[in-house]
Length: 284
Ligand code: PPS
Image (cartoon, rainbow, N blue to C red):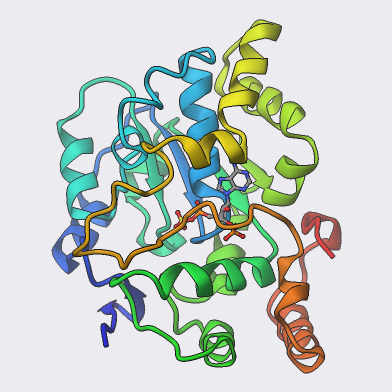
């Protein structure tokens, strides 16, 4: 059974990650003012946001998203491949990261680079993660949802505790170069969210261009796009049937949690997220 790559108390996926690169990304990676970062806790809608931002950059033209794998369009700063691609790329970069706040490259904090931070109901994050990770060879595989539920509440899952990740990153939410979005709001009104992202990035799209962004970033379009649906993931990293675009809905946790689990989750959520205005978390 695969375990994790432990780095300073945080479990990282075992494939495609190295302690040295995580360390380097934290201490040595130099941000440029024009860089854009998509920052999330895993399973919060990272790939959806990548597709939207790529399409905004091409004004709705799908040729880029249909010809380059999603992980090369917006490489992971903390992975071996992503780090190399990013340091060798000239000009403005589109960067992805799941890094906890305290590991994030220090140079960001003295740059004008922008972060789009997407949060999602952690109950749905848990369910999405459970079904995704068990088809990969990156992490320790739980024998049941009950086991994974326990690990998740303790933070013994890839990238550590959702609660700590989210608490720390939300401390940035008043900054001008930080855009906070939720999976739930994007689902509810994707078009308005795309406009919000355009404003944040200083981009102007014509109505027909906006429609193309909407069309090509839809769940169905992404599921059919082999550059985005993870069908290109190699056999050393995943078992058959790895599906990044599983259901794409809000509230799926209600189909999986027992009443006791739902209550236990609420209790931990209230304890760990105390102090934040409830309106910040737009989910039931
Ligand atoms: S990862 O592995 O952490 O990068 O995964 P991430 O991309 O953050 O999250 C995967 C979930 O996002 C859903 N998704 C979408 N939902 C709606 N519309 C679109 N276009 C879309 N693209 C990805 C995906 O289905 C995963 O959620 P679940 O609940 O598992 O379906």
